[in-house]
Length: 282
Image (spheres, rainbow, N blue to C red):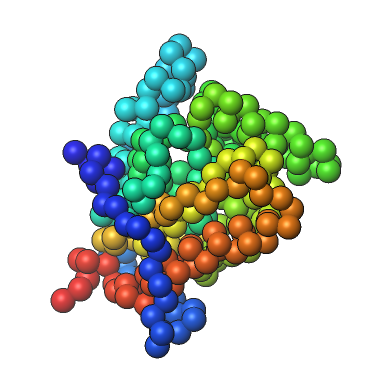
């Protein structure tokens, strides 16, 4: 059994401690020669796992459909995270209904974000990615075969195109996994949340689940090719936020509620986490 089979449950995001800084400092360990050597090995193991698993999934996507191979997708994503040398767990709010589709909004850290989060709940989650990513070798073909929703940024009409594509996913009873910052963090903190995806959630009446991943910024981050093993990675899926019956005037409050939940999780992590990996601690 993995942590996703028996997730911990939590009622709410933590409250900020009265004497804690509003935005704790991000402290990172210095990279050593050992880190570089380990990283090369982990990259090799990760790519050796990724290539055949993606090829197998693409074959099955075409023959039986992605919805019927969830066991394989969960095996692939969990394996990909384990091969970074990380210890993974999920903390899922009990209000999240396994039978109900949601819009999962996750903080954006690195290229393994979808792997990190996917096994946290039992939902089939369709991805939403920039159309440019569909040109990537192997990965682009994988996204097309799975039905990933492309995000175009060439004209004002693209918003309505994206909304219609996302609506089709919900009509099939599937959930969506979206990164509302639109880009990977450069600081380990939450960036600006783009309002467009919140507008779409409102128009579809889709409940939003704030998803905060902690620890992954220490493992692998934008601007560095190193994989740094030995850290604890936690996926927090907090209580759903309803959008049904809300309007434009309610949009800022919904965005702020999601931002607050994610920020509290990240700030609590940076206040308490050890900057060195487990194997370098005394």
